[in-house]
Length: 401
Image (tube, rainbow, N blue to C red; front, side, top):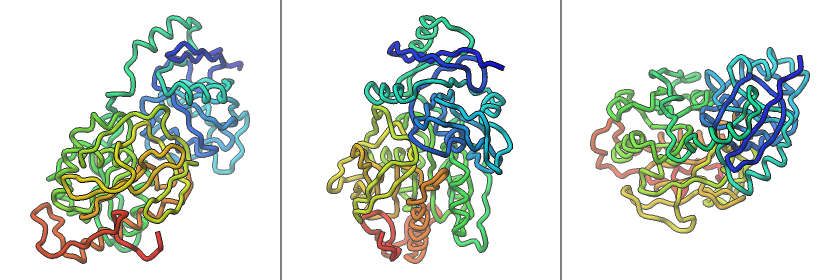
């Protein structure tokens, strides 16, 4: 069966023609590009992409089909999908469905046959913007009008759409060593599994969780996940994190959890021109000088001075990581209490694995605090000396990180 014609219209009037891929219909969202050469199934099921139309820069998509094991959440979250050459045949022994069939089954409107190189160059020069895909109408002016009438990503809040409706527990693998309260702002399934592998019992909690509800789990640490939307709208979780920091409970955040941390430290956030998306982004650890290849999905960043330290309501802080492509802040830490975050995705789903050690750092941080006798029950901290983290915001684990 020949696919229906489809059209992609950007808010600045640029038009790309192609053919329907996935579900037939119409969709509008912010169009962004992802530079990953693989991992399309993990990208599609990453809740951080809620509200966005994702264009893949890799020319061949769908080669390995879709399997039941690599979903990072309960469903596909992208609002639209743009590819150049969809695979005609899936060729992996793990695959049990084609990508096109899964997109269609979940109602994801896509377009294929697009010059994604030209599209990516356009977005890189003009910035991410609103766009629409339609395979039910060829009326470009009408679609452009609907695109320009749609809300943009600034001021958008999607946390309520992607968070878990109720708390669930991911048990520790082997002997339980620690308990973590993980606030789901759009968490990927691999993240609690990475912690469970390290003997952590993870209580994954809704984004609406209160400080008292978090403390009721008896956490050795608090984690805040990746997620979609504008961090300026995440007021509730910022207020909760401030209470966590007041109690000196160890904290680790990634992606949106990094931006929330920045806001809790009285730093600003801003929208990037076209963002970082893919699994090949170079990030430098400013403490060690080492460079990691990392997985990203963020269109906003924290505004903080890269050099030196800055003052926060919780003592001095510093930027710990930067992106080498554009010097965007990729990590933060407090110097006088146990809290740190990174802007990228260390769970490595899909790869690379350079940053998985950050979960070990979180473990070391929590164990170090426990050894120092800090109170993690929400009451006043112990008068005993706090185990001071190093400049990266975590306990030195002897790995030369």
